[in-house]
Amino acid sequence: RPLGGAAGRPIGPRRARAAMIEIHTKEGRVIECSPGDIVPRRFGLNVKRRSILLEYEVPRHCILAHHPIEVDFGATGTSIGSRAPAGGYPSAAPPAADAPGDTALAESLRDTHSPWLDEVQVEQLAGLIGRLRALVRRDGGSRAGV
Image: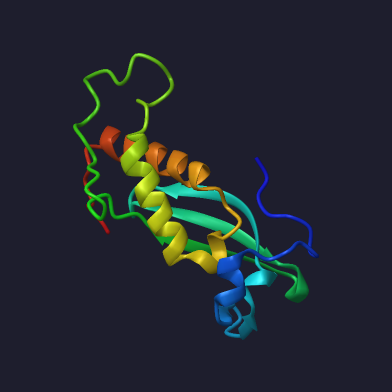
């Protein structure tokens, strides 16, 4: 589902408290914006780096950018779990997420990355964490090449 809202949307309580952030462009420019300028667009998962990648836009500066969010499964007592059984899982869907642990981790990530995630629902982040956990588990939990 789409993220964010209209350019004139009210800013959340965490965004109101946050300081200005800097965005470093490929061209070497540094652009300052307030967290209220950030419009989250979509998420991706990077299994190799165990991270969620947020694509966001800053309409005022006509910028589309990415913000990596590293997921530390051990941070809240959650774990990767065991590797997928031989032949994979019986259905196309990965196993259900560890809802309580994923929710706690999602809340922590939302607080840590509040300028980017203030408007994102904790349940959506928890779902992404569950999907990432399942993909890491399927690949055997290896961090090779990172």
